[in-house]
Image 1: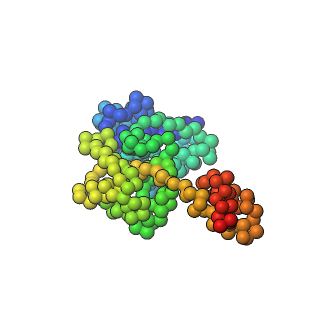
Image 2: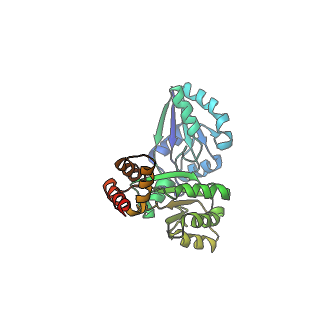
Image 3: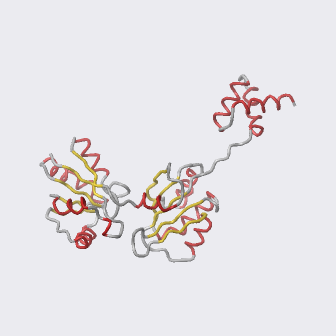
Length: 277
């Protein structure tokens, strides 16, 4: 059986290409590339000659290409998958092929390397201990608002991609839904000549995006929500409402405390004080 190789390619600077990527490009039996023209520019910059068969592997043809690639793998070929930049299968073609290989019992390996997600997260200055990746932001205004509403209480740092043409309108919606003070970072053209990292509140970033013609690849890092637990006295009436419905005071206090993130004992005492008034 052959091997499917998923290889990360440079985000912009060819110098970020790993030795393993260079070797795989030169020796793979099949190279499935998201953009064959970009592949040609990359190999030229690296001084590497592709000896295998090159096939296009972009989103619109991904499903159609999978049967042929599986046959190559079953026949013992090494199939290398590369996207335009970064890691295949992460908001780029590759996931469906990997899933098909796993189902078929074929070997899948990864040649790690550049990642716009991790690069943006690392330079953002926002917490990195817990984060989530959301792919590309929704295009339609209504879907954007619903999406940001879901992120309103997300305490992890969130990373996502956006088109430079839509960045200003996206940030404007973010301000409406999340507020102007929510911290965020816009990373543009990472590792390239005109790399730019802009940090600030959403309001500041929205103003920055309005005032200029943003170009290039854009990755946005959104700070997590800081949730402030309510005071027990604010929730005591909720406890007494459950008691009026037939629950024991301790059970009602425990239920409300668990849901609202406060101390059960403190909430119980607050409910007792309120009931005595």
